[in-house]
Length: 350
Image (cartoon, rainbow, N blue to C red; front, side):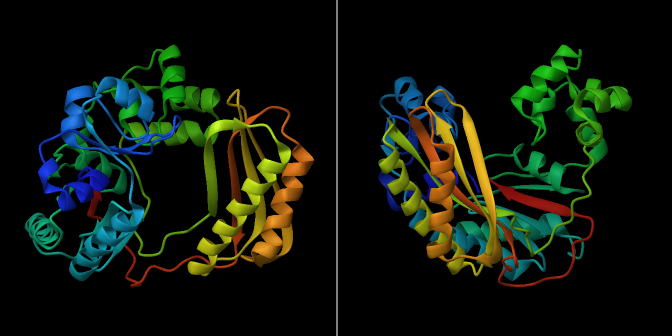
C-alpha cells in the first residue's frame, strides 16, 4: 500500500490532501510511522526516522498521532479484496502482501483490476510489483510508487540494478554494506561477481552464500497462506530513562499482560519467555527462560519475566523494556488456507 497510515488519515481528513503529513508519536523518542509523499519529497522524511528530526526538517508539516485501530480495519478491507481475487495470499503486515499469480490468466491485467477495486472500495492506492520471486517482487513494487504497476524479470533486474549499492536488496543492512565496501564491493555487480569463497570466509558460510544469491536476485522462498510465527513481543520506549527497579518491574508486568492478551487472541502458546533491555548507552541485553509447557497465561509469563529482570538487575538507567514469548506449540493460521505457491510472484507494499 502507498504511504498506508498517512493515506488512511487523509481518507478521513480530505482537507489535508496535497499537504505534507507525518504520522508519529509526540514523545521525545517517538519515530515516524509513515509520511505522505509530499513530506518525503520536501524533506526526505521516512519511516523509522526520529520524530524530532522530522519536526526540525519540516516544522510546518501536519503531524498526526497513529490510530492503529483505523489502520487494522483498512488493512482488513484490502486483504479481503486480495483474498477474493487470488488463491494464495500471504499477508506480511498491515500494508503488505504477496500473491501467487501462477494460475492467473493475464496477471498484469488482473492486478490492474484488483488495484482499481481496492481504490474504489477503500479510497487507498497500492503499488504492484510482478516478478518471478518474492525478492524481486518486493524490489519491483518500489519502482512504480505511488499507484504504479511494474513487471520486471530477473535478467532485467540484473542489468537495471548492476550499478546500485548492495543496500538496495532487503536484508542487506548498513553494517553489511560498510563491511562490503571495505572489501572493495560497492555495487550489486561487484557482489555478484565476487568470489563466493571469499564472501563465506568474511561473513560465514550461510551469510556468504546468502549474499551471493541475493546479488543475483535469487530467492526460492515460497508464498504460502500460512506464515510461520517465531515469536511475539511487546515493548515500550520511555520518554525519560527509567532508573528505579520497582518502576521497571511495573512496566514488565504490564507488558507481560498485554503480550498474553495478544497471544490468546491469536491462539498461540510458547515455552520460551524472554526480556529485552536497552540501557541509556544503547547497550541491548536479552535474557530468556524455557518453561515446561507452552503458555499464554500472564500468571506464568509475568513471574518469569520479572525473575529475568531481577536476575539481570540493569546496572544503568533503561530506555526500553520488552517481553517476548517464543517456541510456539502451534502457529497462527491464515483465515483462508490455500494451495502451495508456484512461480509467478507479486507483492503489494508500502
